[in-house]
Length: 268
Image 1: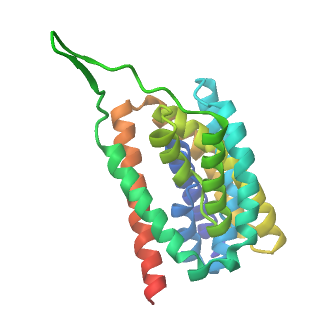
Image 2: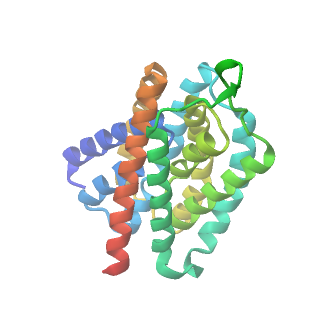
């Protein structure tokens, strides 16, 4: 890293990462990883050095959402509990999966693209029609936050996080909204809390393997704390429609980035 200028670029990247994390409930490595690669980090250090910033970012944003009562703590406890175990298992089985994880990432990109499309569509309440009366909106969908749903979401996100070194939030937000039927803002808040918990086993593993370079990790960590507060504040002020379109756009962009990158690696 080139002295003070590199440090300041790292801090700015941390702020951008924090905003993305706090506003959309994802890890934010899609921003920070290419930046520190451009600053001179090796590919493996670029992966490991982004992880220390995830936990403070998640804590900062989660505290802001918690003040509004948006974090579903029971969902968090069960999802994170199963997710941490799955993250460890995913990390230990990395070398056993054929294709070096590229095929899994392509499948994940397709899932994200589909979810992005679904989120971009305006929600429609089904109508109950009777022969002698006008159509009336049906009752709102009931949240599905039981242990089996939380466990499935946690295992899927944790395994993907541990196996491929990406934030589990890119799966948790879609699963919480489309599958478990949580309101969007509650899904983002709860996902952010889970992302912080899932980062712990990843950080311990990468630090033990010597993959964390603190000259890159420290400025990122400094920047994400205010960034996550800003991101959470923006999400709370946004209307449901605006936030839904924003989340759909970000997930769609991440899907394209991952799909093109992984396809190029697979065919290259």
